[in-house]
Amino acid sequence: MILELKERIIDVLNLEELTPEDIDAEAPLFGEGLGLDSIDALELIVLMEKYYGIRLATASEAKPIFRNLATMAAYIAEHRTK
Image 1 (cartoon, rainbow, N blue to C red):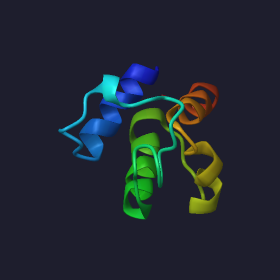
Image 2: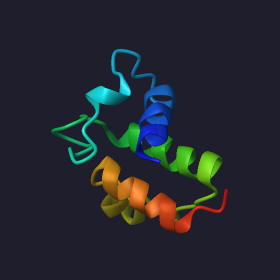
Image 3: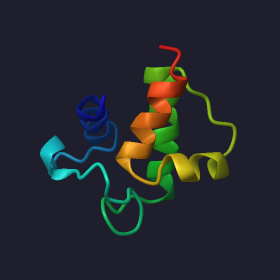
Image 4: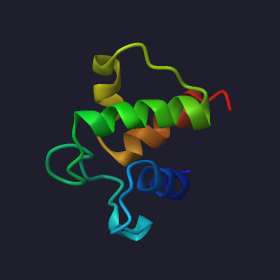
């Protein structure tokens, strides 16, 4: 699940300079770590809906889910419909 998610994030966010091995599953996705921004957060919300059938109602709901890749993968594993 984590490798698949890394590959999808690289693809969706056009992070061609990164490989899945470059992304630490425990590193923060925003700020330090991967350094994503609010536009990237919207892309991650769309990714979750498109590939996993998970619809998040608000960006504030996404904040704890997007703490790092591990928390995102755990949430997807528990709530996916696709």
